[in-house]
Image 1 (tube, rainbow, N blue to C red):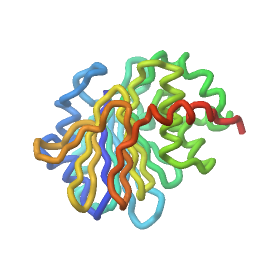
Image 2 (image 1 turned 30 degrees about the horizontal axis):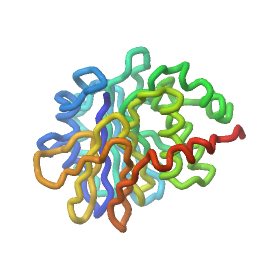
Image 3 (image 1 turned 135 degrees about the horizontal axis):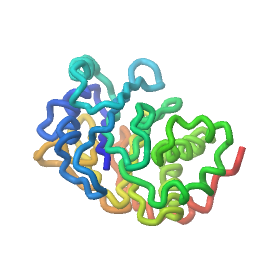
Length: 260
């Protein structure tokens, strides 16, 4: 499994969580604590996305291990941002190890990451993929489950759907198509941050002037709260909400996207 994290709140440097915390994303790249889906390291690439003055995010991705980039600690340390997302990748066997396969994925003002795998790939997703606009399907960045998930979700977001409703829909239809899929999702537009715990762990920590969401806690300090299984966390300026996905998933799954 991959590892990822995101932050929303008062401006801070991504370097703290990526490199300086006791169990930073760097540590999680070579010594993750929870690889229940297989693998032992996350060495197939990394990505970092953040918000500057423009409403659309800035992004950096590479296909090499995070620990090989000697420049990123200083770069990340020079940034102060109210929202960011970062991930390290353990590629699924049979899927390409290329820069474009690394989260965070972006489109417009959104950043998205998927930690997990879709069961039965690629056959299980053929019917859903066929509902995408053909030009989007033909121009996918990489042939991976995460890239397709982002294409499906982005289609809903660009149609104006509420981000939580779109994430709920995606979780439902993918679980229906590939039962037992691991869908630890993160989505932000720089104002709202959504994460899901679906057959994988996710925790959050309120640090007073902001909230961190991560696959694994970045330290042993107090305040880390697990997101319950099959629940979502939604973070806004108003605070943190925990919402049961299964209560809404049937309704959202019924609203399948129409070809455009």
